[in-house]
Image 1 (cartoon, one colour):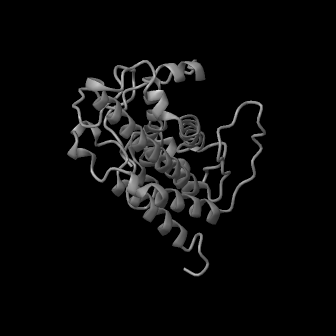
Image 2 (tube, helix red, strand yellow):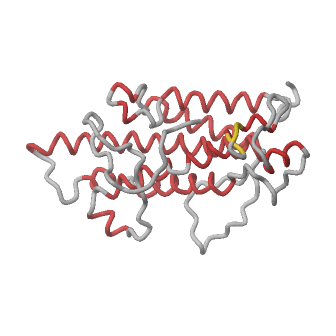
Image 3 (tube, one colour):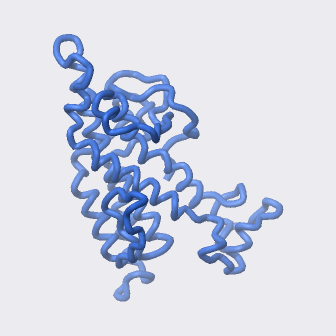
Length: 256
């Protein structure tokens, strides 16, 4: 899935209004890992950093599944021939030599980073209206900006659930059943989590998308072309359908 056209390099501006124009791609951001809960509670702009965070791993995930050795990933199948010299990654697939320790298309850790970013945002911003009202006037001329920010964060909360579901889809597509991590883990937590059944993750993905489907924007381009990279209803539905198709395949369904 190609979500946007350029790499994330620096935090220049954060999208704060849905219907207003913006010169920067909304994914141009970086996350300040030193931000504390006290800063979040007093700086309403910081909420947008964490709202965008689940998106920033999409480039690595999509590239890991669509390209290898500077060429299309299809060269790892019988449908194409690798033309790039010294294509070690494609050769591993051709020889059946891919394993957990030697996988040129491994995005396992990246997917879980995306899941963690989504978990963190969803867990820490239940009181988003209060945070967005911090250190600003929410009446008179500023009322419209405040209400647009509230609406925008509500969209981001729904998008975070879909992004989290997408990362799980990419995981089960590659690895079958994987550990389900429903909350943000710290270094003190037990990270020795057993793999969940494939069907459990499938049901989770479908239920998450069903839950927020009508909370998503149907078409971001009706606001501005800069928003076209954000999750829409059609994207969410595509993830759901691809997940169900995967579950219906003979690989995972004995009745198929």
